[in-house]
Length: 331
Image 1 (cartoon, rainbow, N blue to C red):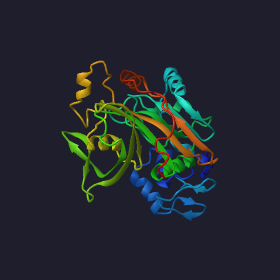
Image 2: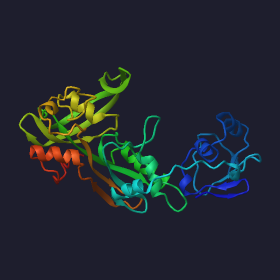
Image 3: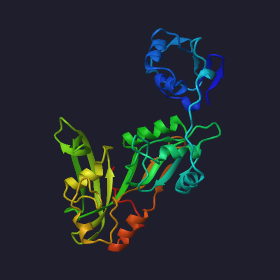
């Protein structure tokens, strides 16, 4: 927590690493962009006695001197969103792992990761129920699509959030997904590599495989865990890059789209032929394996599948608790 003394603020742990301009906007939401830039440009704000630019990163223990006309206590109170007791109890009930630095939850289908203009209930707002004594809620480390289920990481402070975020960008973390594909991949094990780019189609945002110049490289490993002939399979995916809809697009690209993924396979033949199957996106963030960014302890978190996928697995006689590491031979 940052401490204040008149117009001097000492940066605390929860503000460590933030950009100065974003910190100012958070602390003083009434400041316009122009006002903020003028304060910084004219040197009215100092960090440890020195001028600072808007992109400067704050560090715990630094002293920020505010201009005379701007006092910390003058910032108007920001209206805090409320979390119902029911939503708070639900969020706590889906916690898979927790320690002093991070939390892992098993996100259900239909719950968005973050809010937006057309988004109602979401994990980011609900995290207020997990706020510490100073009122600081956890930080989202990564996001899952609204209809994707499974492991999501929340960090209890910005430093841990940045460290985990770097792991997701690099190769220091293994994230395995389970998916139902229809049909079964022609090769039972392999990788898909292509350049992906966001496109607008019919007013809706999608992702398509494109040439190298217009897209970003995406690499996904996969292995078939169980299958019912050539019609349907339980497949483990390991995306080595983090592109939007990467697994969904790569599965469709190799001719075996995900069950319930109407965006990339509107036909969904298997669902039309089996009306007892749930029309849900069958994509589940099954497992995360990484070294704890603070303790260096190996963390291995597995999320049980949700009710829709569980029903489909039972329908085809596939196990819902397969053990082992399907990618243990891959560095």
